Image (tube, rainbow, N blue to C red; front, side, top):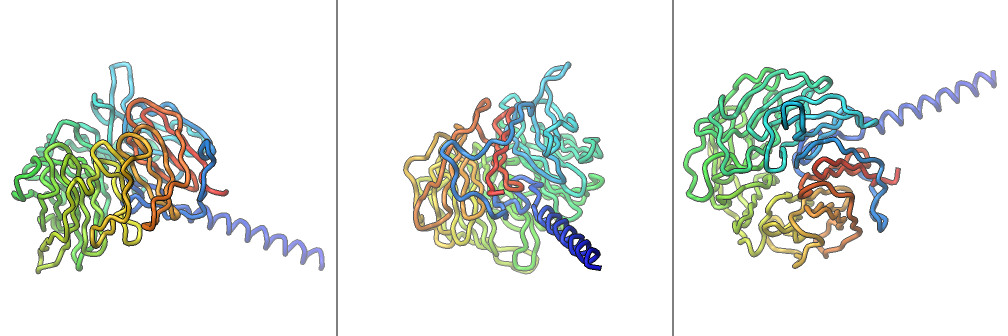
Amino acid sequence: MRGLQRWHGKAVLALAMVLLTSAATAAVPDWPHFRGPNCDGKSTETGLLQQWPEEGPELLWKLQSLGRGYSSVSIADGTIFTMGDREIDSGESQFVIAFDLVTQKELWCTRVGPPHNGGGPRCTPTIDDGLVYAVGSSGDLLCMAADTGDVCWSKSFADDFGGKMMSVWKYSESPLIDGDKLVCTPGGKEAAIVALNKKTGDLIWKCAIPDIGNRGKDGAGYSSMVAADIEGLRQYIQILGRGAVGVDAETGKYLWGYNRVANGVANIPTPIVRGNLVFVTTSYKTGCALLKLTRQGDGMDVEEVYFLSPREFENHHGGVVLVGDHLYGGDGQNNGRPVCLELLSGRIAWKQERAPDGGSAAVLYADGHLIFRYDKGTVVLIEATPDEFKVKAQFKPPKGGGPAWPHPVIHDGKLYLRHDNLLMCYQISGR
């Protein structure tokens, strides 16, 4: 009987360990979209290292077969997804590529369209319900099976929607999945933003944007849109060539526009939303603004709460994150001077006159800290506090070609950094 009791106790303990391990594994959130699951540049993971060794975190592995490109990575269901321009027998082409997360073995590679001669693709694939969605730099939108890469359906922004970019660097958007809809930005006169059935590609609605001002240029910008529920009205918020706009998620009806934040070169950063407030910023001597949206029947009124000049704050690319009541990001054209800005007032809590490295900085928040990844390669760990600018660590990872623009990603206690053809994985948790 005692032996049976001991066996039973061991069995219960073993089962408990399995359940705890399974729960821990299940609790690791995937990173299925550009700027994370909520499109806001923030990771929910905790237990991360609060300090890095002088030489940087432990490098677990590196992969040198992505092809040229500025796409970041998405991670879902044990697979890494990205895009790259690669050489094949017929010349260079643009591809969506999938790798096994554990072994880094390439699983499949699906051609999207022609290469981007200015450095490679910018889109980060979006993963949802066993499907992968990606926009090639020439405006080819593909839906693929996540396990095989087989194409389920495709669209052409130019041929199907009269698509147009505001300037020369081609399409950069990462598509948004919202419920049964895929939402994207062809930038066409009659179809600036469209919603498609995510399973079939059938058109649900298209939205033409009226004249919202003279700043900027017609066509799509380089931003990726976000979804938000504001005063009971779900909408998609995007920065186009002419500025920020809001579109009714159900009908595609144009709701509001704001032109002052537009420039005529490239409108890039993703909008930040909290409640009925929208923060927008672009560079090229433009600045930033906080907008207040108020529902008026089936429409929205937009009010400028404040506008800051480019001397005060402008984000070129790399984006900003909202942590508590403060925004953090890199300031300046082709610069990433770290800045902390109070959301509601626009008051600058702190600003560094010199950046830790050259070029713009892609920013990511996790577990009380900011990770600034500079396009010259340096990675900086900064405490996310409005009290002071406090660098906790920095290091220089191995370098690829061109600027290191791809946004950093955190998944399961690991930091993923892409630089052109190279992908690196670092251990940043205490394990």
